[in-house]
Image (cartoon, rainbow, N blue to C red; front, side, top):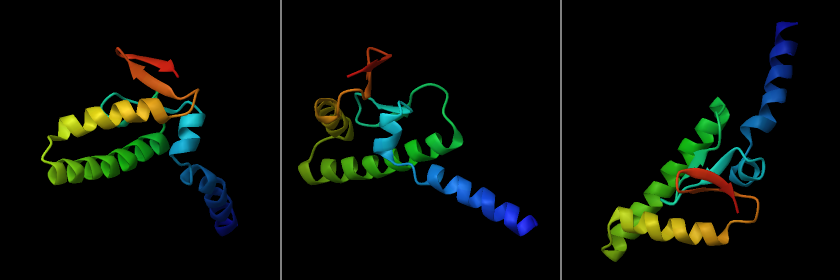
Amino acid sequence: MRFALALLLLLAALPALAMGLNEARGRGLVGETPQGYIAPVGTPTAEVRALVNEINAARRAEYQSIASRTGSSLPQVEAVTGQRIYKQVPAGTYLLIDGQWRKK
């Protein structure tokens, strides 16, 4: 009985664990910041916090790599990439503009 319950809970949690950036954006759970990172929109769940941390860690590593290769500073790469992301994300994506979340 306990095994069946544990299996049921695990199967119910799998779709939540599999949520990616596009789904989180589409559901309005995260938005893009001018620094090229994502942030939770509203009060995040543990899953959203984990996604934000994972995505931002990967982005920061890539930005640092670009900065090292080009001789730029990390803040420069973040700002340029943030601008590019703002232009490329689909309509309906939350963007942090002047400290306020706004839909593109």
